[in-house]
Every structure is written in structure tokens, then in C-alpha cells.
Length: 133
Image (cartoon, rainbow, N blue to C red; front, side):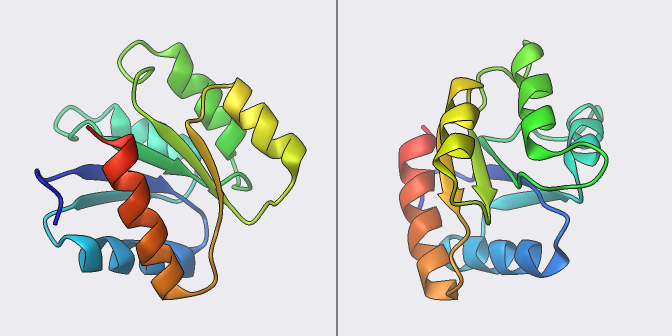
């Protein structure tokens, strides 16, 4: 059980991946508030809505239409309000170059999406306890 209610934002253009992510969060702790966006542009729009809670951690897919994960990460780190929010790249990519570049741009972690639900639950449990204070 996590100690306090957390807010998590996931930006991913694959509805099945988002659904599995949300279900995994609910299994970890049903008090987690999960915001979702279909791409980086929607994520930034959502974050700038007045009553949107500031996420404790943001998960970005790399390959999305309109504004991809890299572009969104750059924009997040340029805005003082969002610069300190931990960003995890959550992608199908396994490329070391992508991993190194995203960390250089400010991502705290680079995770290749697990295919098994139980692996996702384990991964998110670990990440949320480490990345979020």
C-alpha cells in the first residue's frame, strides 16, 4: 500500500496500453489518480487546465502522433511548474541510444513496456515507491 494518494499521468496513443497501465495502478492502490492523454500535446494541454492535479510522476510513450515523448519531455523540462516532476519514458523501444538520450534530456527512467500484466504491476510498484516521495 502506498502511503499517500498519488497522481500519475500517462501519455500514450495506444488505448490498450493505457487500459492495462490503469488496471495495474488500481491493483497496486485504488486511491491512485491516473490521468491519461493520447499524445504529448494532449498531456501538456491537460497539465495546463486550472484544476488538474499536478502529477507525482509522468509516464511518456516515445512514439505518439502530434507531439512524441521526446518533444513532450523537452517541453516539460522547459516549464518551471513541471521541471521537477519525475518523467519515466514508457515505450516499446529497447534502444540504448533512446535510453541515453531521454536520460540526458531529463527522464528519471526508461522502461520497455512489459508484455505481462503481473510484470507491469511489479514494475509500477517498484517505480512508484522509488520515484515518488
